[in-house]
Length: 544
Image 1 (cartoon, rainbow, N blue to C red):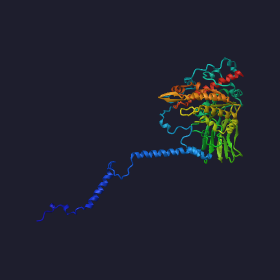
Image 2: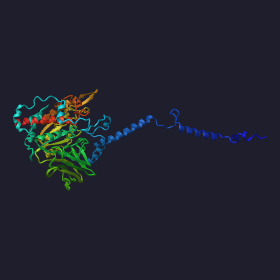
Image 3: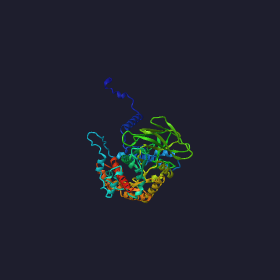
């Protein structure tokens, strides 16, 4: 009798698997396990290729090296014989240029909380008198003008209180400022007439036109407002600003004297040359509605370079029709084109109209007799930069502008903590720069302002950089050798330790780098210089 069907094993009817089939299944299972569970390094086959962590470091280092080489190429290539246009392209490829903020430096600065003037919970901005009253300054100078000056008080356009609090007098031969003081004396405020022009060469300490604005406003209040003065065609540095003017500019390619890339050394009066590229360029220079300076103008002057195959520049007053001015000429030379307008509020537009242009800037002056103060701010410059101007060109620019007082406030970058300064060479450079400038306007008065104290952090404490005293001494000696007057800004503001005191002051007078000034700090320095100039003028009037 056969066995029942339910006792039968179905598997017994199957064909036994072959050894080859079993091996194939095992191979598939091993492959699946390999995908699901990555093997450790110890289990990996010696023939396997696997990226190790150290390889990532190597790749990163190679990438950084490549980036570094790319960044260095625009600097290294400047040593080759190149045209101005080629140099301009290389300059624009440079990740860092003199006067710029250090790349990524803002990532390491503490966040600052902005306050809005007049907002609830914030104190109102201090007045100028409050800023001066709070500033930790030396005692008033013991040798301030004496009572003999009082006998000539009626001849002065300001009271004796205008120079009260004077902390340092101007040093040197009194004759060094005679021309300037006489130019002030010749002014007829409130009436058409002559100007007394001041031209200040400085660094980023005056990059925002702050010291020059104070002089422009305060001297103007006593002697008359003569106008805004010279403004570059376009900004040469991101931090450069000009006050007392409506100033816009776009699409110009600028070259600054700091970098010395223009082969013929012609950078214009203020060290900024504007050139038109393929997209052209346009600027506007307008009077302002607020404030006493530059509310009216009756004369614009366009400073430009004439050259063979020079292009055309077009200008328009108050949205009127554009007029073309050719800059073509038989040789390279500096020119000034005057644009007369009725006294009043006006705006001048200047644009590239075709061809190769090299423009320097525009002067704005009123018909009224008064003081004009030009700011030539070379942001980030060392003193040696002044020798990058073509000597004859710089002299010609000064001859055309006719300043009555040349002020030099250079040297702050030379005295920096990281500067490798040869002091005798620095002094010689300063003397040569003064000589070259005075060659263009030998009758002008000349004044050298010393550097301020500069600080550095040492174990959490602010310390003065010792080299600064050497720089001050070299500047004093350079001024004497060149026949210039000297204002010891370092001593006038407090000497060594000033940055520590000014950093702790409220309002703060110096920014976190312990070398550059806040708006309030600039007000203090410019006011001290103003008092020294007024005191010197009072003595000049009494003596003459």
